[in-house]
Image (cartoon, rainbow, N blue to C red; front, side, top):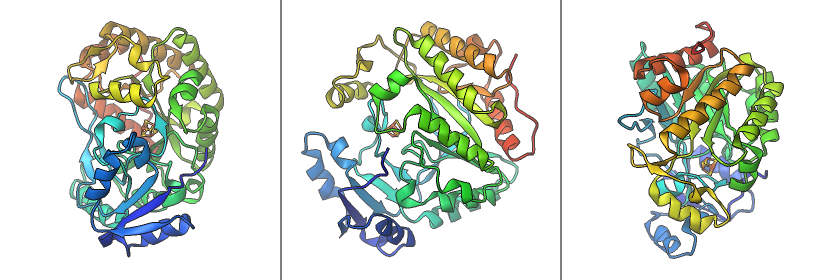
Amino acid sequence: MKPYRPQKIYIESDARDLPHTRRILKNLPGVPFEIIQDTQSLQRVLAERPDPIGEGKRFLLLKRDKGRSFKPFPEAEDYLSCDYFTLHTAEGCDLECSYCILQAYLTNPFLTVYVNLEEMLEGLEKILQGNPGRFFRIGTGQLADSLSLDPVTGFSETLVPFFARQQNAVLELKTKSAFIDRLSALKHEGHTIVSWSMNTKKIQTEEEHKCASLEARLQAAGQVIQAGYRVGFHFDPIIDYPGWEADYGEVIENLFSKIPADAIAWISLGCLRFMPALKTLMRERFPKSELPLAEWVTGMDGKMRYFKARRIEIYREVADMIREKSKHATLYLCMESPEVWRKVFGLEYTKSSVCALLDHAGKFSLGIENPARNSF
Ligand code: SF4
């Protein structure tokens, strides 16, 4: 997997003199750049192209965030959420997963990086210090991959030491890349958890284009563990296809043969789900993908999902395979109802018990709690 190199960089005029802008230009020698007043006209030109989403990834846009960067993860009524917060340091992704929800979600196709990172963190620090009794789990991987652009931005060198200074927060860097080189030298104090999305070899090669191989992800995880970080894994999206059990079993076997269970902060499970508009986009952009052909039902949040009974069956099977390897792993489901949680784990869960479970796992990384338990 090669580091990102755009065809051209656009810089909004009020971001031209920021240190991160200069650093990014230095990290991309020879890439032409242009100072612009706004992106509207460029977006209109891009919208006329045959594949605006794919084309947009070739252009890097550097701009200031105007105070919208820190948000609670969107919750959906009827599904258990876990009070996760997101910090948008970038929007869009240079990688190309066929199932990527950003294709249907983002209106700006340019790969956008917010270069006023220090200002964003100043605002965040005020929020964290203003809520000393609350524990925050914060991720940068909702609208972007947390590390795929790190060779270009070097943002980890600002983010990781910033979180190391916070008493009541952990940062999750969630990625499908293996760009962890900068992390080893950083002072993290357990306040950063690096996590990887995992899938089967078939899904990785057929659907996760431009991403690091599964081996490279596990190797990168091993390296950050050596540097004292705890790691997370996200089996998300789990995809149902003939032979999925054996394939996911192989990934789990391989994972636990390489990664010590006590270095894992949490493991999430989530079956593939997407907004209906994504189905058309997948067909257009990834005609070889078989994902749109599966049987889908519309969930309570309007997203397409596998039937509930099938999801429960899949989660049980994957959770059992993980439990065989690590009896006390902190497992959680992403965007599922209390009923699905109960049927998978055999216990009643509420939003507050899910939050407590994950806060516990986050605090354990800081050495202030015992291991979290949701094993039975
Ligand atoms: S790595 Fe994540 S953000 Fe990037 S294309 Fe894949 S699913 Fe989308």
